[in-house]
Image (cartoon, rainbow, N blue to C red):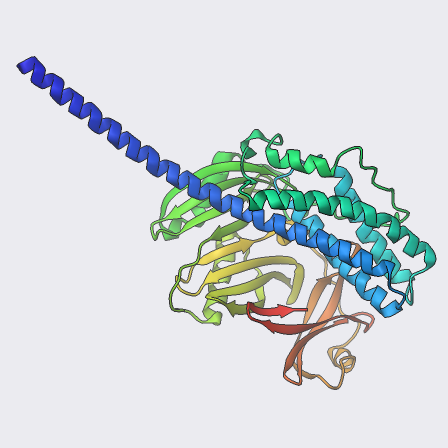
Length: 440
């Protein structure tokens, strides 16, 4: 009887252990699945932005082929420059092996440079030579568009970008993109061969040190960033091999907030951060959101940042920070931050522009005085504020400019006057939408 009792107790204990292990496994599996879903959502959003870019490129090229009006042609060229630049940036943020889209990336990049060249030298209407060149390119964009749309439909039917990602370049997502870069598709060599030819494809990463960190060092780096908020766990998910090679983690805080974070291998820098916002009533003002965003930048190690734009929409405060030097706001060195109005926590961080562009610049003095620059602004505009800024230009150049915030008939405008030549470099208007304010 005694032996039988021991046997029964042992069986019960073993069963209990199996149940506990099963529960623990189920919980861990659930957490891992949640992290994977978050990562997949980030990639899907970037992919759909790329699809939208290519669709817009196709539309604008088709418009150019049937448009004789010079002003309309210039508008289409501007749209093409914008969308090809966006397409290259989105490709860089996807988990695609560097050689997978070599031909396609170069083609889109050179199309961008060609449009910039045409906009500068075909100031009225496009020449017949330029029109013929663009007509030849249209069929290649159609091929890219069709392949992307096939992959888009697969995603809508349940295909996940993250599946097989751990295979380091041999995953299904890379294999699908190989169809776009197929050697049988003979992409044309564009006539344009100026300084912008390979600038996006081979853009130098200037904002990160050359030294590389290990996965363990990146994990400790995240622990240091969130140490004051109380960390439950930091778990490694995968390594992303894009323009930036990153170690990707999930970070869970005592508050229950869970982040998906990417730390660059080169330079050990927080590239992206995302989390779900809470639902409920707003607890903070936009000014407080700006303060939280600046505090986050200081924790990451960016001490000379300044708010250049903020807006509130659907419970989120969007804050754009830029690096400042000698009281000049440097727009190329930008970090975008999202702050949850309910929890007063940072729920979004995107710093790829800063990682690309930040460098120790020598800022020259303005040749044009502030009063002279103000006189270049339309007299219809009521100027509210002004400051010196550096803004990005074509060919990865930069320009020192006066930024004027102004209003007219209830609209807000931002006018940029070259601080050396007095030329109006850009004018933007704030557009109010259901999803918040935009600058166009």
